[in-house]
Length: 178
Image 1 (cartoon, rainbow, N blue to C red):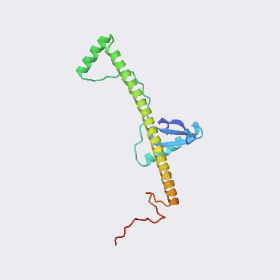
Image 2: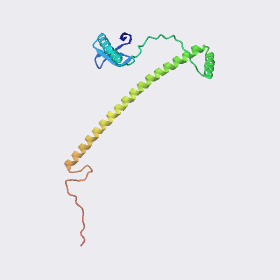
Image 3: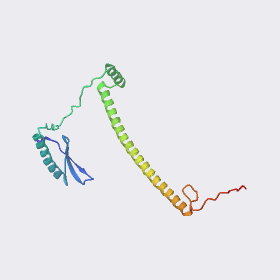
Image 4: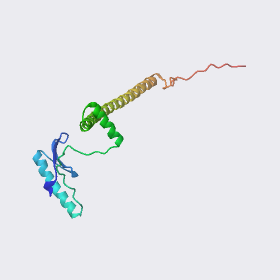
């Protein structure tokens, strides 16, 4: 049974090793210095998982099978939309099928491009946010250093942070009335 499950092997740079996984058992993985070692280790892990499932009376996931695509499918839509598509296809001088395929391909391509653009923009926003946070923290540290320095200098000459003398008595002019 374990031979019917698919295994994917890929290199993980941060771990400096190959990792084997199985889509049907998404929580399982094994690693190795070579593809073969990762696959061999994964077969052991998979066998143990299958035994555990069987002992616990759990249903095993169905193995994925290869599905060939015919390139055809049937789609239902409102009659008004169907009529509009037929009219546009006729104006373009193509069959409804050709026109529909071109719309699907165009939409699919735009969606993929849009998704990639969103990912790029998200990375840019993340970098800008990170940069702003770093600059804010640096500014806070600089402000604290300046405030400390000013306070330290003020204490040297006998002034508090508000500029009032702390080491010399304050003299007030007093008038004596007799």
